[in-house]
Image (cartoon, rainbow over all chains, first blue to last red; front, side):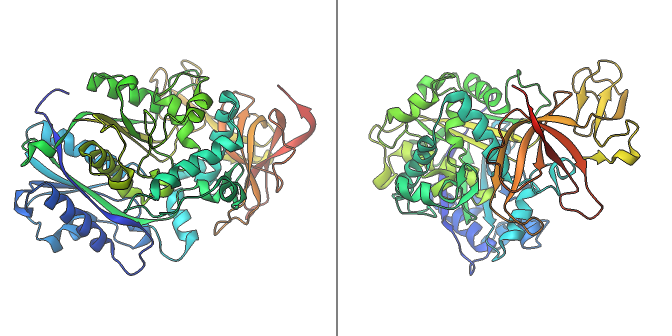
Length: 385
Length: 126
């Protein structure tokens, strides 16, 4: 990456779950304070804030200046606050912008906070908000929920890769096994194949326990070119963002194209990765991204899944946090939380879910929305320690 | 998904509204001002054919405020080889095999969904 070297110097999160009595401000402040303490900096050191959120406008009515409302209770004023919305990739988009800003030399130390409250005691309202992450002119008013889009993508992909219902269930079992050890996860309980395959059908073949649930939560990172404690800092070696192109099916898809750019920027290949956090908004999507992120070749997805390589103590652990499926998916927080997990693992601070070989190179992959043949946005970060 | 009923259609059949580049012929379903292939601004709004083929279908079991489950959403390939997600008539995708022929139906005003694809009996393509 050209320009000033940029590091994650601190991370923090509020547990994901359902917190009807806690405000978005409370969640965001909790995560931000943890990240500041972890980076060994004070609010006075923060030169800019990048605040990520997708649905507060629709769900709480706070459509504008969301980030400013979160930061003021912490005494952060004066420093500019930038509000970032990019559907489920809002958090990683904020991190991308923060990285770019610090790399340019405009700021030395900035804060990224992603927070979301999706639980409003009315599932229909939340589903309606989620629907707005598509082009409503194209997909609105037709009953085309995200779970239906995901189900159809999985059906198409499963046929290409000869995947079975058991492979789909394995992704949820693996996610919950990891999430069980993650203190910030929404679901901290392992589930069995029987429970997954016996859970309610949402959109065939996607069942309830394969879905990322409606969630509240927050995550924050401090991004700095001058980390206070360099020994604990993790360098951002790639930060790539792309939007969905008009394309024919024969042309490279969005996720694959973004991954290629990220590998090129970092000067590493998929074989160099030690750990990956990827966007399993429904758990079987993990299998799709094995191929699209280049973790295996076309035709080898089932073999990779069944090899155990991507399990917690495999050679390439994927979603050690529990992923969106088990950690939870409070949309604006997700992309930031993925990076928190990589940092905890790379520092050896992941507790009961710490992978055996402390990872040196890690990838975070975050998608948002849907347009045409692809997610509307894809953001990939590669970290190195 | 924009569409026109048979009565208002220049083709005399219900159709999706699409866009076509006058210079390179590229067709799109999403609103297009500049051609995504050749960047020409000479774009015509057109009415596409009313036939398609099912790629895959899913039965949705989760109701929304506007749609009572179960209902079917399909990935559809139109006769022009454009792909879209669209509602399919019926309440279970079981027995709806990939390749099933589909015909677009625009429904009475106020219906939900306002248009959908109806499987054509006995018509299946590879």
